[in-house]
Length: 119
Image (cartoon, rainbow, N blue to C red; front, top):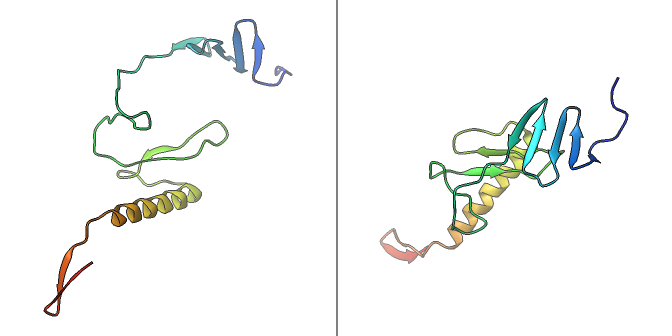
């Protein structure tokens, strides 16, 4: 029979997240179906706090808003998003990023019909 309690709930020094799933209150260990997983330390990174250290770059990554406990994160230079909503948001962000890049480009000299002008 299923446990009638609502998840998550506190039980001593752990938080029960669901059936056979709990996490230590210090956030260092999660247990799932009897297997314990310990938080791994990340290699030192001294870049800007908003940047993610590249694994292999350059790359372009889309990270969606959290939804029901999950979050989409995908390299969109290698894979297309499946969800229509995420695709629309990603496309809008790409257009916005391109507009920002275009706005900061230095003026270029173009010759049209023998006439030189800056664009």
